[in-house]
Length: 190
Image 1 (cartoon, rainbow, N blue to C red):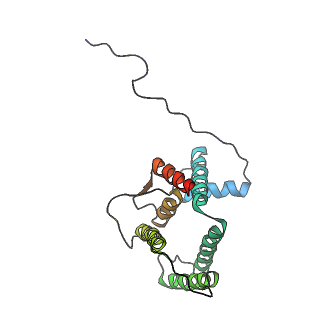
Image 2: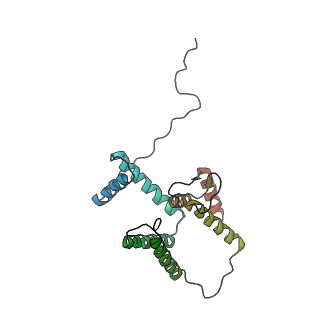
Image 3: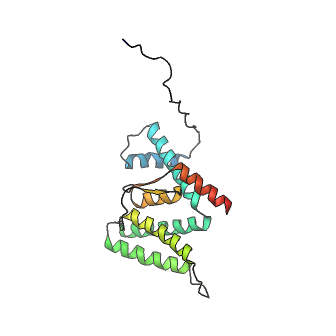
């Protein structure tokens, strides 16, 4: 009869534990984290609050990995406007056509105001137009209005996070660390 091998299995390495941080939170923030955990159907425990904090920090890091402050302010202004309209109608623009129409009209007006036309037209180079068009297609894919086959792999974690958020987590979009690293290296060479 063969004897069992003792010791660490060959080829397997011990996983390094993830860092742990400690932070003091105002009571209202902690209460909000508990409320978020409840809304997501999680039972309340230290682990669920920790999971909410982890998700919030990942969101914050990914969101700011691609963003410049003026773009973040534009996104938050649009989100704030949509939130306020939903408060007025007491319905979601996702499900209610009246709310959707009001949100759409006011966002179009806000964006038109903030991105008012330039005094002279600018010719957009074809490569920039193409790359921006590809990003738009990714966001359309996330909302379900246009679907790509299989899993969409992006080298931009911030864009992947936004697309996942738009799709409500129902779309197959992922990032791979090696692609993200290559993107950073290419960006550093420019």
